[in-house]
Length: 345
Ligand SMILES: [Zn+2]
Image 1 (tube, rainbow, N blue to C red):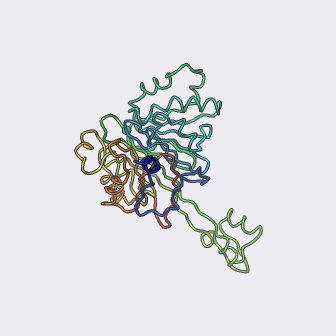
Image 2 (cartoon, protein in one colour):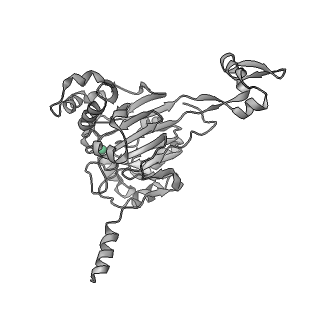
Image 3 (tube, rainbow, N blue to C red):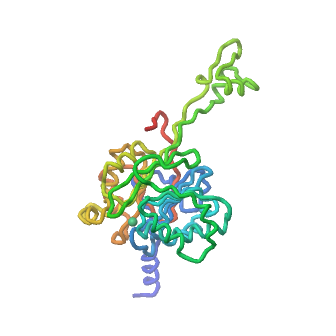
């Protein structure tokens, strides 16, 4: 083969894998370091074993000032650096279960955290049955143990609320994996916003605006104006994070009506028997979960190394749901605005 042709072929075979999306506008995601105030940062998309193109599992939700890390698999500290995620600014960590692809990065992330932000506490939610594994991970290397009080533990004992993370309520529910595993959901409270054009139309200006917000009613231009007339309720964001599990009702409850569902898709339908045997979902099952729960956007991750081409996962998911992103490492996905008129659970 001529050298030039061989070089071209080599370049093609090592070309980065194209982003695989189905029915999603291209401006939703971006591989560069994003400055979006609300986004999902994909740190890793491999299940079980990392590959040349996929790091172990890991995701970060950037929610204004809060950074929530989910399932730091091996190599997460390095992926955070590549993705522009600061360990010092992490607010909270959620671990779904203690298989290595979901937790082996925790010691490195925490040690980096104490290095960069030595006095700032950080919360950690995890299945309560994994307390001993968590203790091992905390003792994985020789570090100053005086930082233990900065790790605020939130063991999950069953379905229900866990804690507040910024303006979000964190809830969890046990899923159906081969070991105790939980899924998570973050709900932001609805907020009332004053609309400047309505204020102007009704002649409410200057000090009257503050008084209207404090007292709920003012008189402007000889007319009584209430706060409800000049404001609207904006629904809060709702996100579910469902990793290793077979399809189950708890996953449906967690995903009910969310704006974004981040879900595992370890296998495709042709390997559904393997998915069931190892306590996982296929891309089509994840898509059916999104469809039945009324999710608006589905982000898939946690892929078996048997599918180096993400198109097979996208095609499997497309059989049941339209708005799907088959995530790839170091992808930044802008979170959609919560849908107006939606109601909280
Ligand atoms: Zn896993």
